[in-house]
Image (tube, rainbow, N blue to C red; front, side, top):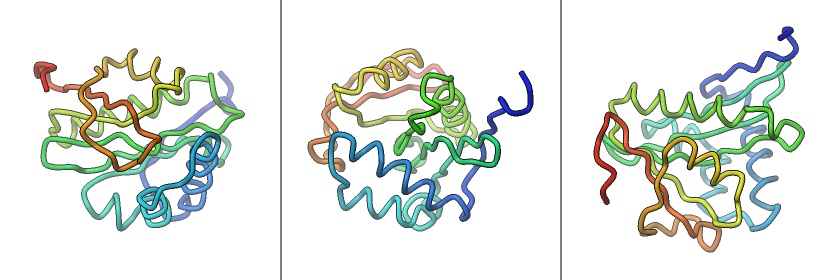
Length: 164
């Protein structure tokens, strides 16, 4: 692999906020509309994610943000995986796997027991990724994302039983 193929995963940096907003807006608006919660999180990730104990990760290739994922703090043992997207030109290259690995590593560093996510049954490629990493579908009891979120999945860390 030459240097131009190298993709780094970096933690939150204010200089990437516009990329965070643009990449997420693009994928959301492919099929839905931005919810108020999206606009808050995307416009000010420092306030709504970082300052509350979460993190935003960026996949960088040749000094360009090509993907993002956020770990939103829920409580001392739970994080929500949210705002995960890969720029269209970079899909299918394993970028989402790199982000997922870093998000799971982050949750373990924070001694979390569980990561959950909200997705949509129409997002087959995303669902395949979540299944690959061991996320299990559970009862949907969360409506932060309106009609867009019709599936809730959890990943238990530290060998915890997968019971809801």
